[in-house]
Amino acid sequence: MAEHDLIIVGAGAKAAGIATKVHIANSLGLADLSVKVIEGTEVAASWKGRNGMTSGEEPLAVTPIKDIGFPYQSHIEFGEAGEAIDAALAQFTWQQHMISKRRYARWVDAGSPPVRHRDYGEYLTWVLSRATEGIEHLSGRVTQVRLDEAGERWVVEVEEDGGTSTHSGGALVLTGPGIHRAFPHEPAVADRVFHCDSKREEFARIPAEGECDVAIVGGGESALSATMFLRGMRPRCRFTIYTPLLPMSRGESFLENRVFSNPDAVEWESLDLQTRRDFVKHSDRGVFDPPSLAAIAYDDRCRFVTGRVTDVGAASGGEGVRLEFASPEGTASAEHDFVANCTGFDLLAQLRTLFPATVREEIERRSGPLWDRPAGSEVPVGRNLELLGMRPRLHIPGLAGLSQGPGFANLGALGLLSNRVLQPLLIADSELLDSYKPVA
Image (cartoon, rainbow, N blue to C red; front, side, top):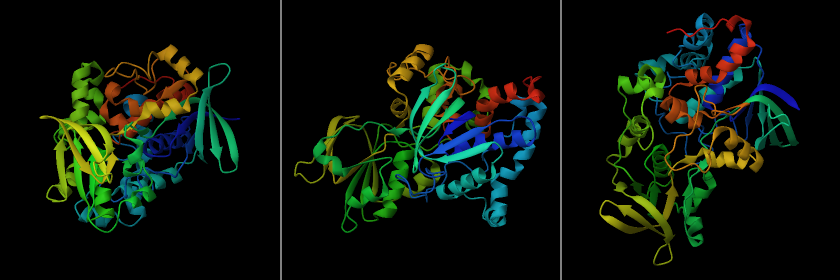
């Protein structure tokens, strides 16, 4: 069994941020850490446009200058050693990537415009190919995660092309969005229902010729990505976006951005739950990024309906789907040819499939109810983005947005995210960090 200090499931943006910090810490002699990154599809799979409901052409919602090292304030966690780490990160910046591709001057002269998802995926691939000190990559699908007999290490089972393998880690990081949220519908219309992670070939069921009417259910980035993708794939289709709230664009003021990059600036953990929930809702969830929203603002093929879809069944004529939805005026219904479920992803549902029942029971014994917790309750995530009470550490950044700051669940502060996850390992591993004291 291969043993590592840390195992990361998923080779995306969060893995790139963590792997780069480990590479630098090892290269500078600040640590001697071993990390394994396991990916079942491809590096940066969510960004390249070959997987799920994205073409890769969508504009990135944040500026790429907020790269894998942002906000470059490692001194807060690691003192002077953190300053050395940030200085070494210069070789992994977005700017250095663009320089290496001989595209930096052109991008700057164009006004540093938003980049596409596939451009960002190319950047992440470049980063992970250069972060090598102490980093191992494995192409395979994680089939199960359990505890060892002593309950002190994670054991990850992976299905590879040549068979299966087992890997042990002192800590575990679970990344990725999860699986699409449940979307109950009648079996008779299954071939007319798509999800956020539907494969590209599935969308081929939408006729290329003639006009089609497609319902998009959801009010966040997934819904907008689906609309942008399908508009390009089927330009003659009409789209109706069902969203429970009025369509809003993401706020981009200095204060909002500051909360993402440094939640301590507003003492995020001290804010009451409703204040934190409202901030996340209006700045991250259930909102569209302004450039993409502007792209469909005057498109006659796109319209918004305020309402929450409650049921999906067969249309009256047998061809198409019927949506029942709760609107401000009461219950209503409408018929469409196809429907795309873009209500988002559920990370906890994915974790349920990875952990056997005995492990889920042990996690809940130590951390409290997780999978069947009351609706609206807060997942107990600590400052290191770990599930509170669980040892060995189980880091789930995607669930940390409400507890620790909105930037941890997305691209808002990848450098801070990696610092938080690695802080326990670096302080325990390195003599140079033994005298670590937070810098105000």
